[in-house]
Image 1 (spheres, helix red, strand yellow):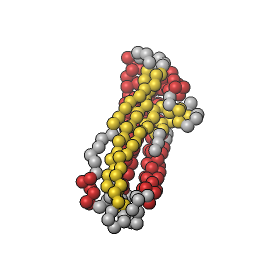
Image 2: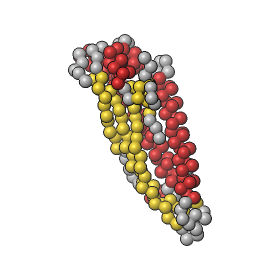
Image 3: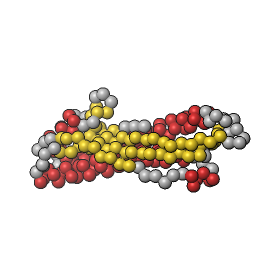
Length: 199
């Protein structure tokens, strides 16, 4: 059985706008899906059967997704330019994690506790990567100015181009992290071995 972690997914600001940046914190939500089994092997097999789908076929052990919306204010300037003076994010990070549907034996519960703690630690790194992306978007957005744009149209196109590059970098960072974690001897590999084999 091949099971992967996956994160779903989704440039200098003038000092005068630094104070305009909002102080914000991501909101976190945890969703669970039920699994069953009376051994580590059975629990892992249940994860493979019931885990959240990545794409149309591969199921994941855990999933970190996010919802991101923005409050933006574009202001035409006297010289004909347009400046983005406010970019305030609302970020919700959503973890989907496995959860045994029945009470486990004391020995299996200990193994499970180690496994799920490792899963949570892995997914928190994805959350940090997402949060870093949003901070970078905020950094390049606030104070962005485009000349000869009195209707604030060109600035939106320029901003979207910057956001595309930031999003691409975030996806690559997630992929690199997963590749390292899931390689033989990596943290994910070790977690699975400990759950299935107890070693």
